[in-house]
Amino acid sequence: MHELQSTTDAEALTTRIAALIDAGRLGAARPLLAAVRRLAPPSPRLAELAALLALHEGRFDVARQELDTAVAAAPDHARLRICRADLRRQMGDGAGAAEDAAEAVILDRNDPVAKALLGVLLLEFDRAEDAVACLAEAVAADPANAQYREGLAAAQEAGGDADAALATLTAGIAAAPERTELRNAAALLALRRRDFAAAVRLAEQARIAGVADAISFGLKGQALSGLGRHAEAADAYAEALKLDPGDRYVRHLVAAAGSLPGAQRAPAEYLRGVFDGYANRFERHLVSLGYRIPGLIRRALGAHPAIAAGDGLGQALDLGCGTGLVAVALSDLPIGALVGVDISSRMLAHAAAKQLYAELHEADLMHFLAEDARHWQLVAAADVLCYFGTLHDVFAAVHTRLEPGGWFVFSVEELLPDHDGTMLGGGEWASQPQGRYAHSLAYVAYAAREAGFTVRTLERQTVRHETNAPVAGIFAVLERSRHDG
Image 1 (cartoon, one colour):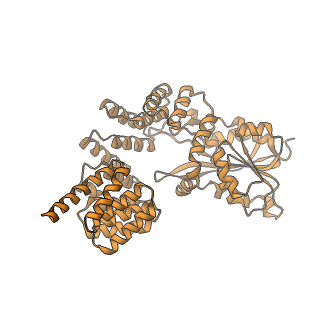
Image 2 (cartoon, one colour):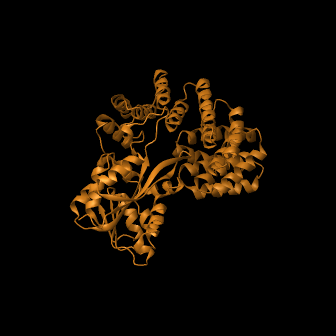
Image 3 (cartoon, rainbow, N blue to C red):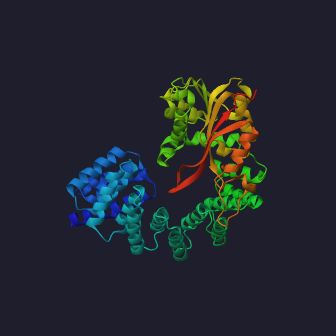
């Protein structure tokens, strides 16, 4: 009888521990778990809970040790495999995670959790078709699960079927109208398709249904901004700010929407706040997006007459240098002292750690160009002019600081027609829903010539990928004439 009571107590406590971990009450879960482990014999469930607790506490090594031991003792236990797959994914071991998830599917072919996790991992390996198959089975097994539907929609979009992705999300909204995340995912998909009217409609439907959150209003603001309805966008951003007053990104969008269409660049204080907060994960994130601009700059400079002749270049300026990715790309080229300028002190700290810059300056690039009287043989601006609308002033400032024959190498994002073929900004430049600016090829060429540059290269290029889609960009090499005085 005592043995039966102990078993019953252990089962009740185990259920309680799981609930405490789910609720984030780790301090309460820890002593209960220790008590149950003294009371009951080892089991896969207790090992799983111990690993989950360690994972929530950030003790990844402890969680991995718990799961490795438990999987070795019970290799046919699917839930342990799922738990270890999730842990491996968070630790950056994508291949190991996929192996465990696949094993879990083999062990229990009816478990939608295993299929959904495997689908998400396959998508990370760019196997969209296989990911769709796994996630479709997970959705079929549990149609009400919003995360499965979001995953399936992401896989369908990555596979090139945005219509199927929207249908998946729309069906989910119909089945679970209270799930805000599905509504937001559908609105975001519409934004990526540049169907701004549909994004507004979806966000408004969420508001009418009473389930809109800060993200919903932010997406509505971005869509309205994309339609050129800036006053309405400002109202939507203001609502988002009420719901999430600490969001710097929303703060910028509120400020920008309130002054558009006259705003000609992103505010300096916004850029400082965003990139200070972004600094620690900046490089890892950009690399994961297939960021190409530093490599394109290196390729272009390989064709520079001085470098091709083996003479090398003099001192160079890296505008908006960030963490120093351009310096890394150019580090073995014969270029003189490289000076970096950025508005974010935390980004500059990462650049300084690379020890590739002769100088680093915390400054707004326009202020630096106005106040530093030096002249440069090379000025680079990788993915920074997307925070400027009109390019005339910055082009003129760079032209003034270049040596005759000096090169200005930079990228911008390309202005594309909307879903209905409308070209915003008079076809020159326009604020994008993300708070950056995009420019047309013709406008970049015009502004360059107006500033006195000779255009050496002006070509369409993919800047990076976002949400599994290429970001259209323009890569340019401009030269200050040797005879312009």
